[in-house]
Length: 381
Length: 134
Ligand SMILES: [Fe+2]
Image 1 (cartoon, rainbow over the protein chains, first blue to last red):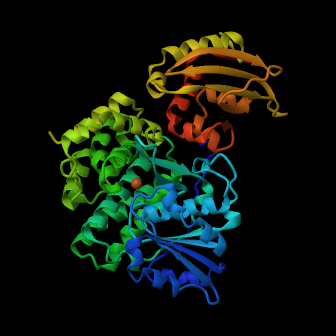
Image 2 (image 1 turned 135 degrees about the vertical axis):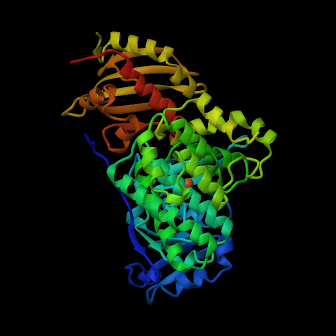
Image 3 (image 1 turned 180 degrees about the vertical axis):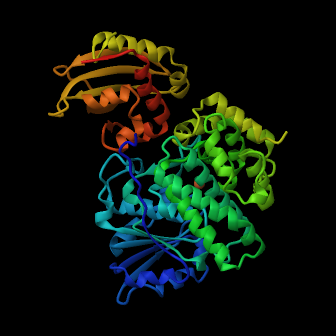
């Protein structure tokens, strides 16, 4: 029997020219959060030109890669003075997660970052709305109530997985204009991230009919179009399919949770410099092998969603074939990580994976031995 | 079969925690005590609690307390009796239980975030005790 559960997603505005939706919002004071790279493009102007008449805006663009809490919130006093009623997140996962953390801190001056949990009412939505405009097709953060924040206690770097339904964006704008010229490497790594979101959501212990529907359609759209995007990057129709699919995969995992690939991928990303999508994509084939005994039928269903010419005997073979074709690394060497450096970090990697909530909702139960054994399989030696 | 909650139940539960390798694996460096608080189904007032002294993957001691004995712990997991029954029968996932408001979890979040697996294994161990309900 289905027990009480939720399915929460933002209002979704999609397709060409969807940015013009901004003109009709009820908000008037906009904080635009973006990163240093996007600040150098015409994207912020594009957004500002679509804001309602008689509105004012402030740009906060001082966000780098894998931001920590202090970096995300360093302008909080200026932001408080400006008093936005809406935060527009214009960027990839780090930017959208930063906007969520800024919204939390803006509404909760006295609280610590660890208080960003679903356990308490935080009064965020009463204070400010979040509109997310992704500029990559993959992280799904525009549809999720989670935020990843880097943290270091001096010894170990961690990726904290924070969550509250109050940081779910009110609106996600999926305008393909922002991803049309996404570079190849980012196109592949973020698409792989989205594929992994869909697979993990579909097999999570918390899977539910709504997340299942989103996960399957997401896989169909992404696997059906990503190879065409790689061949013809400016084709707006293929880009649009991957962009919409990625947000569907985001809404799937946000409501049913992630799995071991994210637990282990976040651990790897804490110890080595690697794109998030490459990190989760690196582990998913071996995790599929590990989980196969627990969810054979679900994996068969997923395999059948891949384009016919990419289907191999099982999902393990299919995903490896597909990843090789689109350029996703399958060993740590291919990710540019030295095997002995990787091995020397093994116990930290296992410990961080065990701490991640993704390892709890994974299709099959895991422990430190099983995680270590999957970790070792991707050494490529 | 011990009745939940009672002295006998807590004794058996502590024994099960101490032989649960999954819990030992997940909580190998955990230090801190835990309080399970059982509330009356209708009044929502605490009627009993179970105190657990947890250290490095083991339970160093457990105590059944009736409502008159107040006890503090670093973490509390709180819910009405009917939800405890469903939790012990594994009809409710301990984390989903918190997210859907069937249970409350109190304590320093910085720590609990890193030990969610340990907390889940701890609660799941209750299912290994053959239990009779009132
Ligand atoms: Fe991801």
